[in-house]
Amino acid sequence: MTGARFATLPDDGAPLRVLVVGAGAMGRAWLRAVLEAQDTALVGLVDLTPAKATAALAEAGRAEVPVSTDLAALARRTRPDAVIDVTVPEAHLPVTLQALSLGLPVLGEKPLAGTLPEALRLTAAAEATGRLLMVSQSRRYHPELFALRERARGLGRIGVLGTEFFRAPTFGGFRETMAQPLLVDMAIHAFDTARWLVDAAPIAVHCASYNPPWSWYEGDAGATAVFEMANGARYVYTGSWCSPGAETSWNGRWRLSAEHGSALWDGTGPPLVEGAPSPGPDAEVKRPAGKGIAGSLAEFVRALRTGHTPMGEVHDNVWTLAMVCAAVESATRDRRVVIGDLLEAAHREALATAGAVERERLAGWPSAVAALG
Image 1 (cartoon, rainbow, N blue to C red):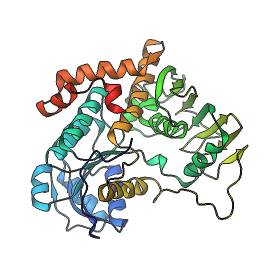
Image 2 (cartoon, rainbow, N blue to C red; image 1 turned 90 degrees about the vertical axis):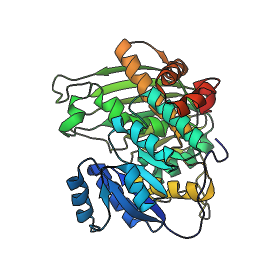
Image 3 (cartoon, one colour; image 1 turned 180 degrees about the vertical axis):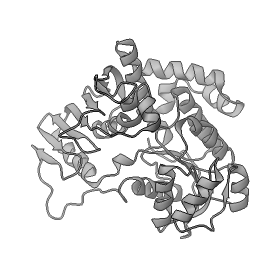
C-alpha cells in the first residue's frame, strides 16, 4: 500500500498523548512501553475494574494518572491524541469503534478482531472516519528478522518458507480452554511474519490440527498448515504447544529456500544466509525503531506524524487474521480453503451486522479483496 489513508497529527515535538484501554498483563506491558518512550505521554487508563487500573498505575509509579470505566468520558477529560486498545479480542470491535467515532487513531493488540466480519467492519470504520487503525504484530519488530528479510532479497524467487514452533507453556486460564489455542493465539504471529518475508498475499491453505493424548489443553494444541501464496511460494507452518524438550524460541525456527540459496533463522540470533552476497562493512541494514511492542509504538507515532503507512495498518493486517480463520476452517472441515472466498463471505456478514457508517463504506467496496488491496 502507498499513500496515507488517515489524518496525521502535527509534528510539533510534543509527545503523543496516549490513553490506554485495558489493565491486564499486556495492558501493564503497554503502560511500561508508553512511559519509557520519549515521544509518548500517558494521560489515562480505562478498565472495567477501576481497582485493577489503579493497581497497574501504582505499580508503574504513575498513581496520579486518571482512571475510568468509560472511554468517552475519560477522553473528554484528558484530550488524548490516540488510544491503545489492549482489551480481550471480543472487546476490540466496540472499543475501537468508539475510539474511531471520537476521532482518535487506534493502536490495537492482535488479533485485529474476534471474527473476520468484525475485522472488515473495523476496516470500513477506519476508512469512514479517516483515522489510523494499526495492529501491533510485535514479533515483526526484531532486528535479526529485519536482517533476514534484507538478506533474503538477494536469493531470488522464494520456493518455500517454513516455520517450526515447539514449546510447552502452561498458561492456565482461557488459552487452555480454547478450541484452537495454537492457531488462534500464537500461530498468528508466524503467519503475519511469513506474509512479510514472502511479500505476497495468501491464496489458500490446507491445515490439519490435533491434540496429543498428554496435552493439558482442551482444544487442539498442535497444527500443520500449508499456505499457497500469490507469488507461487509455499509457506509451511508446523508447531505444538505441548512439546516439552528441545524447545524453539518464541519466534520459532525458520528456513527459507529460494532460487539462488537458502536462509536459516533460529528466532533469536543472526540469520545464516547462503547464496546471497554478504553486506559490506558500510552497508546500511534497515532495523526497527524498537524491539517488540516498543517497535510497534514507535512506528505508530511515526505514522501519525508523517503519514507513512505503517506495518500492521488495518487493510494489510486483515490478511493475517484471514490466514488464521482460513487455517481453522480448513482444520475443522478437513479441506482446502480459498482465502478470497472466506473474505467475501465475511464481507456479506459484515454488511448484515454493521452500523450505518460502516455499512455505507462496506457497500461501496467492489469486493473485500479489492478493498484490502
